[in-house]
Image 1 (tube, rainbow, N blue to C red):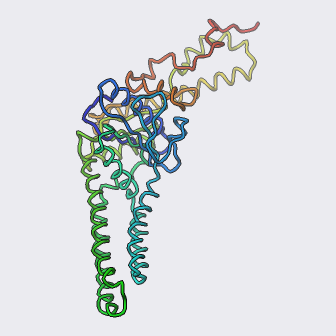
Image 2: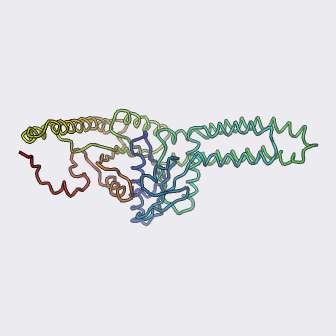
Image 3: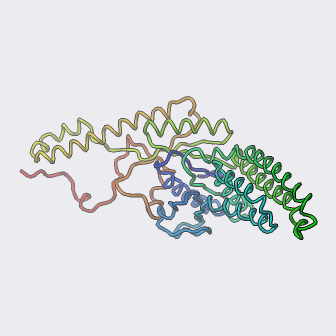
Amino acid sequence: IRDNDLNFIFVGGKGGVGKTTVSSSLSIQRAKHAAEASKGDVLLISTDPAHSLSDAFRVNFTGEPTKVPGVPKLWVLEIDPGKMIEKEVEGWAEIVKEAGMDEFLGTFNKFTSWLTSLPGVDEATALASALERIKSGQFSTIIFDTAPTGHTVKLLGLPDVLQAGIDKLDTVTSKIMGYVNTFKNLFNPDAAKQSNVQALLTEKLKNYKKSVQVVGEMLRDPKRTNFVIVCIAEYLSVMESARLVRELKSQQISNTHIVVNQLMHNAPTKEDLLSMRGALEKMEFDKQRRLIGCARLMGARQHIQAKYLEVLETDQELKNISVVKLPLLPDEVTGVSKLEWFSHFLRTGFDPAESTVLLEDDPELRSIGTIEVPA
């Protein structure tokens, strides 16, 4: 939150663990710090076509940076990276069409279909666009609410894959251009224009590859970039997070924090239930069963989560990574005010073993000093 050198923060992890809530909360705290430290604005970007940031903030965001009401220095941008790469490719296709190269169009369409299917290529296109926004000077930090685990890391291998594709396209183009130059110069008024197509396309592809390489270099710069992993304290999520830590390390991407979300707290213990035995015995059987069932469920979940928290905190591979704990709440964390309230846990911390007051303020519950059981 307070690292002034950071320009890029990626928030990622397994689907359904609360990445969007965490990235939104982190962006709010980062914007607050930017205001305190007189730094540039913060831009939160989602590459999710489902537009989950609009749902999280309950604000209608668009394909242009939009200021978040009530949070100075925070902007949000929702982009569809798939559409961005399609738009880029359409520009290349127009060059082929305008030159009247029908022979080449089928091959080129196959190439673009291959290109758009590459894992990470849509994120790479979006990130290249984000780099330009940093260069403009308006934003000092860009936070990415990323796709589920894997895609962002996969884009690091894109330059080599793109080079193989460019070489293959060059080979096919050279054959077609040889045919054009040999047979069509005498009959086609666009022959000179067509002769430039190969060089123009190759140059555009190389420039695209170069922008992807710049993104890769940015990702590997520990001073400017950090990757925050979000998980929940369950076996599948913790194991996938551990694999992601290893993959980030192998790719030389900085990862200093794991956020463990949706932690249970205040679960009644067996001793608590025994101390209430007299009151429970005076209740109807169904009410007893519901209360004891709720207590057992909460206690079991809290026990499971404590086990996997210990795994995260004692694993030698994770010894240099800070574990940040966030609570499971009785209400939804949506809307600017609730996200801002929830974001303070990123600064103050949360301990499920010690926390006692996290329920939404309810006047009726607050007025209860002791539970009176009818005779």
